[in-house]
Length: 56
Image (cartoon, rainbow, N blue to C red):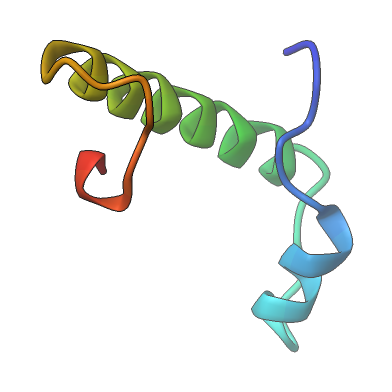
């Protein structure tokens, strides 16, 4: 993965008293990237150049 799309410290804040493994942020970032790509594809298929919440 080239660039991390999530903030590790924010993940730890959300997880509260749970430990967060070192590879969790990378795995989540991969899922976020896939989600964004699917949303972009949906927007493009609908003739838009703006990704909107409904594309998720």
